[in-house]
Amino acid sequence: MIRVLSVASECAPLVKTGGLADVVGALPHALRKQDVEVRTVLPGYPAILAAVDWVDDVMHEDDLFGGRVEVFHARAAGLELLVVKADHLFGRDGAIYLNSEGADWSDNAERFACLSWMAARLAVEPHGGWQADIVHCHDWQAGLVPLYLRTLPGGGRVRTLITIHNIAFQGLAPVEKLERLRIPGWAFTPDGAEYWGKISPLKAGLVYADRLSTVSPTYALELMTPAFGMGLDGVIRERAADLCGILNGIDLDVWSPEHDGSIERYGAPEGKAANKAALRDLFGLPEGGGPLAVVISRLSEQKGLDLLIEALPSFLDAGGQLALLGSGDRALETRFRDLAETHAQVGVHIGYNEALSHRMMAGADAILVPSRFEPCGLTQLYGLRYGTVPVVALTGGLADTVIHANDAALKRGVATGLQFAPVTAEALKGALARLVELHAQPEVWRTLQTNAMSHPVGWESSAATYAALYQDMMAPA
Ligand code: ADP
Ligand code: GLC
Image (cartoon, rainbow, N blue to C red):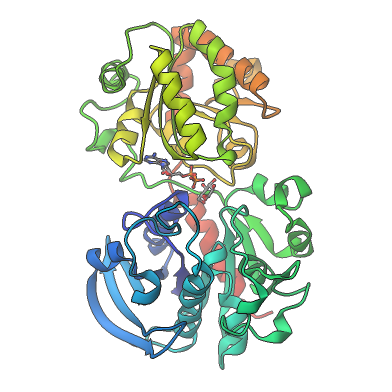
């Protein structure tokens, strides 16, 4: 039995802004079958405090960054949690990272340093007889844990892993906060936690953790290049020997057409026509013989949806339809709303809607993911599961999870979707034209759907890989 303390800023189904939450919420269940016991350290946002069953008080600190902090053991959604209750830092309504103007909370550095500090203490102070062997840190919000452990007695006993879900977020803070954040002076150097004169919690994690991982093998390689490393590629290259890429899975109890409570008609290909008709109704789309493609996404530069706007006219001319669910960048929201107003073949829902996302997956012919970079990506995995053919940029986890329908792959009967490169509007246009062409050939299309549906997308294999990694980390050096 290996005991893992997982540290993260979000966790589905309790609080979610993206795929990180899905991974943090699903992996512990899959690891249980691998004889790994996980406790997850989370910030005590109001939504979390309201959802959990209290088990026990664990520890407290009278004054951390201006207020009292308490950690309690709790349960929710089948997960063992350690909730860091700090009302002065987490007791706010609204988005978890952003204020009402859409800007980062000015004390995000303190908020997640608090999470990391308490997690480091939890790792070295056994609670209720439970002592962690490994701390698994997720993204910059948990990046300071390995550094804090170096300052705590007994910290050297615990092994640490940091997983990069998205290097675009690094949590930089001004040097003036060094002492306040309890970062020792010796660590503020270019080969430590300093990044061009600022404090970088993510870099601290990359430098001081025993091992590094990311969420696909291709992204692990991309991260070591200037084009994808976002200024940290050199740091990651230095640690190449300690880095690996492990693909995300999806929770098949939540995402499976056979037992998806959000949809009325089950299963593709048989149920697809009825689900598609229902989806057209939801988005006010007319009848039509062409493929209905969906997008379910944060609207940000990363996701490449501006390329889709450019590529869309020729797809619509060829009989394609688009239904988009997303929110984020205000300018993109407006552009998609305008498209829906001027084109009968386009339906847009701006917002976040979990139930609708399931209906879209069930009813669509294709899911589009034209990302400029994508560490893993989950929606193409849902697509595979629902026979909703993924059309993806050839990058990161999208490259690792979809088998491109070129002539050879079609002939051998292994293709599961379409990939395009380079990530430009022109190449996307080509992929959409190919989508229309394949969709018009019922036999080919059906093979593509059934191949997609039989592609393994659950957690089993990746959970075994994480368990092996933890095991390896614990082996004496
Ligand atoms: P990222 O984490 O970069 O946003 P992923 O593909 O890993 O990308 O995960 C995104 C997750 O968020 C998926 O579960 C997806 O279904 C969900 N999602 C994104 N936008 C929305 C939305 N507007 N409504 C419902 N779910 C959404
Ligand atoms: C990030 C990435 C996404 C990945 C998710 C979970 O948000 O953008 O590609 O699937 O984390 O690891």
